[in-house]
Length: 365
Ligand SMILES: [Zn+2]
Ligand SMILES: [Zn+2]
Image (cartoon, protein in one colour):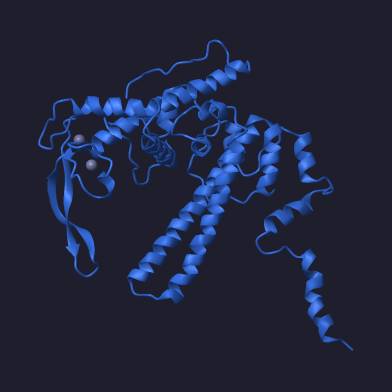
């Protein structure tokens, strides 16, 4: 006679031989191995040159730069992050860089998801959906936020072991997390034979006299995420209100504002700025762009009130264009110093040949 308990247990007995949902790929790989008795950690210690999990093998083999073209939804690490960190400390630079790239990509993937779910939640509320709809999404946003924070902490923990960590400690406005995000885009700075290549990879080169833009159907040879990170670094440098790069920003800004304001927009760079007029859309309560294009001044006087202008000096002038230009100059100098610092680290370790270029090929901004 078969009891109820036996019947329930039967499918469970068969479970181990079946590939499980989600973890199937790794299980199947495990089964292929002849001697699966060696634990992962010791195998890692014995063979330090084996390919790093999580990075595409082909880009490692060609020794190319790591592009953003790969899906951010990379397979999860096969070992817990704490084990990755423990291993990366002694396993050399390559291992450390690929760990940084992997954790940074996971961070951005979760961040993207969090923003997407959060937008969805607010859209639902705007459309009149109640808490029974928005509540679960709130929970999802909170969960994603906590994972994002964990990735952020893991990234900082990794970068603490990076040779540039002591250098970045002296940079005002950029901390370990910022360096981690930057290295998460670039991988090892060995990928860049000179500063201009590093700047160009991060979108700070010039195409037809302007900053590069993404073109539909064309694969960009620069990293969009990299430029986003650089802009975030510039924002944090400026927000701090002191430091070498902040001084550079202030100097450049004042110099540009001191130039003659030219053209119909009064732009120091003689550009014509246009924008679309915005009018209130009564059905949504949002301001919407109208089809009417109008001329916009480059520089506007400070309105003197409002939450964004509490710290403004009297008679201050604001210009997004001039501000972005000054930040660009500051971050380009930061990238140069970063690259030079990396070369110095390599030279101290005796890994740079005397003939390799130490200085950027141009200082143009
Ligand atoms: Zn302008
Ligand atoms: Zn102001």
